[in-house]
Image 1 (cartoon, rainbow, N blue to C red):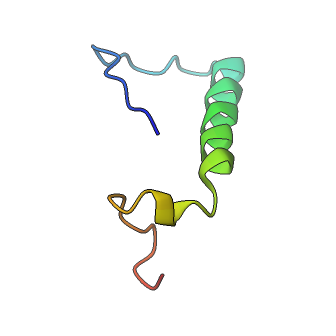
Image 2 (cartoon, rainbow, N blue to C red):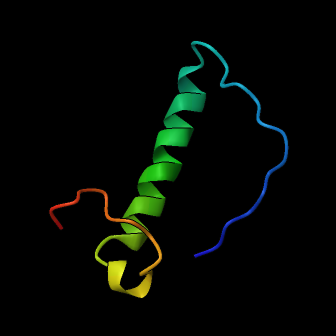
Length: 51
């Protein structure tokens, strides 16, 4: 897992459907790549306390 500081935050463009689809796709890919790999990243908190 890698984290990178991208610098200054920029607000999301309002109503830009393509941008929103790209962000959703990127987040889904990150989630998919790390699914069921929690034991490899013990520093991360669980999404749900019951797990």
